Image (cartoon, rainbow, N blue to C red; front, side, top):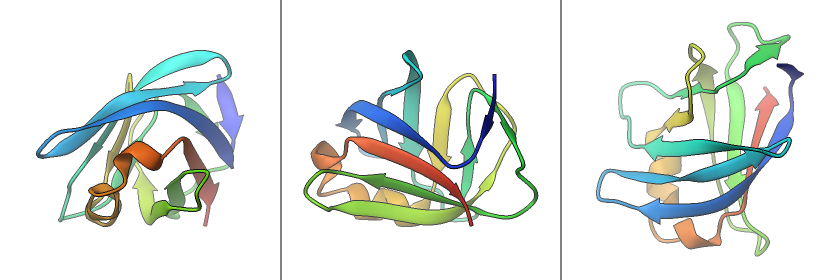
Length: 110
């Protein structure tokens, strides 16, 4: 499946662990594993589907909730993977105290 950005995924749940968050996200009625982990060197996102129109630019990746809380980072798109993996120090640190409030993951072209 090839997709054009931006796109939005429904976050079913997120579990907090010492070094990461794990959960599930739904996109077009298909459920995917979601992993968000701390990464200080470089921010990368990998997704289980190919995307159209994405160059070497960084993508704006935002996770948000109905209360207005959000965490975001400008992240480079990595290779395709079997799950959604976000490696971002900024997002991880902003999510530590509010991970249970997030229900939407959005990916935009910067």
